[in-house]
Image (cartoon, rainbow, N blue to C red; front, side, top):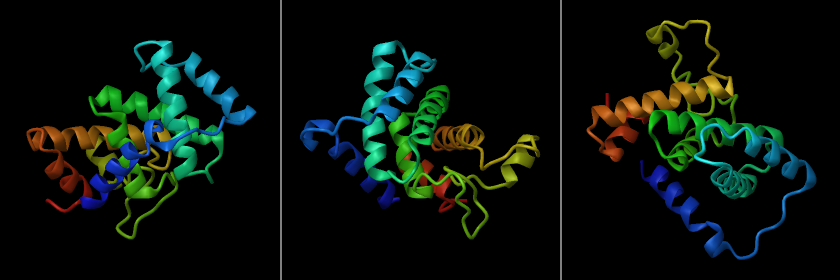
Length: 171
């Protein structure tokens, strides 16, 4: 739990206001961001999409630079879409992903949890969709955000307890 909060605080602390001058994105990343901004359905407007995707894209490049630019942009768009749909701050979801899988969408825990948000496979049966692929970025984020929202509601907004429940620390 402390690790999630620590990462979230570090994520915020490393924001551009304190980070100094940022490197300009390369041509491929710029093109991918332009395309993502043009299809920014979960944002209020194009400006919000451009600011958020550019800012988070640069942060994610620092934290997970080994992931190809196309996949990073896909993850960011999907995180924003699914987090917004679930009523969660996208930055919280990014922090959970960093702690759970370090942005590896093929991550598999010793307990069997899968994907970016380390969703347990029993959920596909519980939800009645046994053919869903938890290694698929969009599917994993949809499940993970829905589960985190459920736990946040069950814990009456107590984020610490909801994150502990998500992590399996509270049964």
